[in-house]
Image: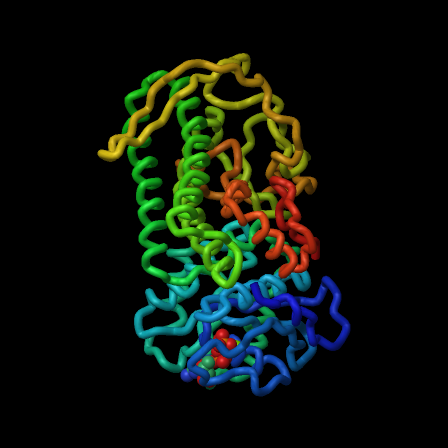
Length: 459
Ligand SMILES: Nc1nc2c(ncn2[C@@H]2O[C@H](COP(=O)(O)OP(=O)(O)OP(=O)(O)O)[C@@H](O)[C@H]2O)c(=O)[nH]1
Ligand SMILES: [Mg+2]
């Protein structure tokens, strides 16, 4: 690994507090991040026609009217030193409470390509509050489609409503006004060695390795498809409930096994010059598998939902969506859990069926009911296993949310699944994670408590 952390001191001069609106721009190399920063601040000489990644560190600048701070960052997809570039982006996100993450994408003749430039970042940041994400489309002077056309596509496809457009001829006053309008509230973001590889893609495109990880992802998807087909054959409700929970556990073990296979097949050591790239390939595979696992968790949440749940409401503090399964309509805290395990079974039900899952080389997926085991009758009281920000909420005052039928669940389903993207059990992986912690400035390999959220700060 290189010394990417060495220049993380900000050059920002002036009085910055957690209440200062702070915007971080992220995006591909050459999309126009530095051009925006130059326009909004007193800086010159940051943008370039260079055919390689030009900005190599993150730096923060006051806007020319001193109303907010904006961070320029390196392109996340740089061909050289992807790790170093992305460490710098992480530093920019950790620097101060973030009022908006602006994903920069270059306007292309095809709107789809412009949208993809936003999508690939937004998908990796699903754990951040949705209203923190915004899009900034540059190069609008080079296309014929209108901002309105793109805005509706962005909203429909990604659910992102905040978008700013810019071209070379956009006056700095207009751009500044637009940026001020999109500032809502500061959110503390922590990028540490636990979530870094979930948020940033640092692998190259070496085909041999990609072929290997793609095959694992395909197999993983086939397991899910096989499971979906087979589980219809079980008609007892209790079995269906157990089955889906056990399948989740099986899929988690499969993710770890796939990591081992890929590491062995490609002689990964997670050290030396290739270390970061190797970790990036494993993370890239696991992140794709997590999306499949998310579907399984949504199905599990459906089963957990109590009958009669017909409403979902959003916590005004952290934006988690909850459904009320018991209790009154008054005050509670975000994250308060039901008193007993709520699923389709009788609450006194204490036996879980045990299943064995297997996928044969001919692609056939099998589920065998292989026994029974006891489970605790009540859910865990360990607060670290809870979701929610812990702030006071009043059910009746919480904004209603329209959820699609399949998302009506008694528990919130987030991408925060605690699946390690680089298993500790891989030889050399722990050393890599320690070094990553050092580069991020965490000092030691810290473990973020399970369920800890990036908390919004009150205005
Ligand atoms: N036509 C046009 N050119 C632009 C626009 N924004 C930026 N450019 C040009 O695009 C090139 C790259 O711009 P930069 O601002 O350096 O891009 P960057 O995202 O900071 O690039 P890296 O630092 O390498 O990641 C420069 O030649 C800019 O003049 C725009 O809106 N329209
Ligand atoms: Mg730049």
